[in-house]
Length: 452
Ligand code: TYD
Ligand code: MG
Picture 1: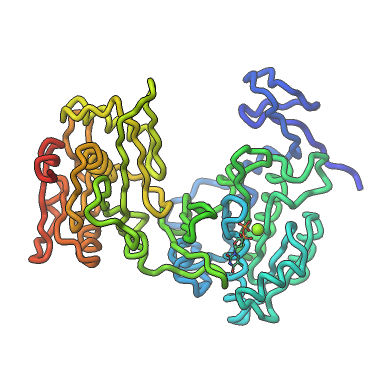
Picture 2: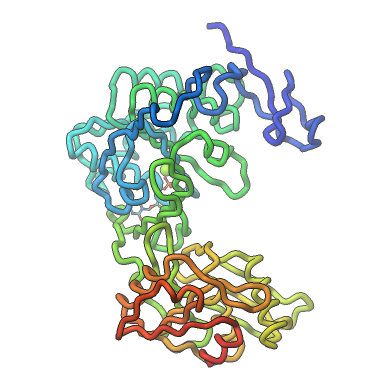
């Protein structure tokens, strides 16, 4: 067979070279060349789009939201925005061992049980290993087909032949096309394999799951290079040391982004956690200094999480600052605000922050809880155990509004909290209830007066 034309591209700036180069002459980056197929420039990044048409009035464009297939695993259906859209490409990333294959097999099992023919392609495990896992999670269905294959051409041929209702590729880093010389797992291979799989899936309206490993050292091309090609990107959060796993949608063309699904890894696969707030607060030490509860909004769902801070005198010239689950830079900023505005001099202290349960909280509403936890630990005074704190903090120590306060306060009330400390500017949209005391504040000074 005649080989297609390939070239080497700088993965940073796109510089093209017919040969592999160690250093990019254009952006001076090192070791950033990967072999890729030279494709028709008209096709852009998305293989399924047709270019060269005329502009149309928006009224005349048919809306084609494909049919949705419900998986029966409520947490996954919600993360996907209400089920799997036909013809959509879904990337599911995470560290090795976090549970990607397990989750996929569970989804496949549910779909196969409801009479759909599904194809699970694995390039990582042998059929008997997959069988062992399937036995463990009770995936016994005649419509669940397993194919152990790494050749892209053969996988495509099988998809054409079998015409499954859904395809899983586990993992995309093992698939390799003989059109490219570069090794499986390289950027060029991962991109080429994915774009051809996505094209095939779109053409026949088969939903496609691409499993991608994320490695810390970046030795294999990460799922990052695929994010723009797929419709939905899901990532596993948490680490394999913890029992629970969070699946978060980073991008979703067919639903809300940032939605999370919470699971617990048990001995018979991943179990859904339908009441995550109670789950995350289960081991909370009550009345311990440094522990504060926050009502965070993950996608459309409010979740209560515990922020823990440990502030202790440092004997290092440069005190240690460690933040797990919250933004490190944000914490530095809040330490500075506490120092300058409230006169709490944390400069000489080691500060450790953690969101209990391995959750990540990325919204600004976490600020006030972080400040409260640090102040509580520093002063060695506990925060009332039935209080939830939320709000954004500005550089002058002012407390700023947060979104959807009503939803958050309701979740706090549901879990038996009786006081919320919230930004004053958010309270306008809040209806008063007898059970919940709302304490509206405008500044950090007021916060500290209220708490201690
Ligand atoms: P796996 O799905 O193989 O991870 P990935 O595909 O992301 O690399 O998950 C593997 C881990 O999950 C492994 O350490 C074993 C554990 N596990 C359980 O604890 N219970 C189970 O029922 C299964 C199937 C796996
Ligand atoms: Mg796996």
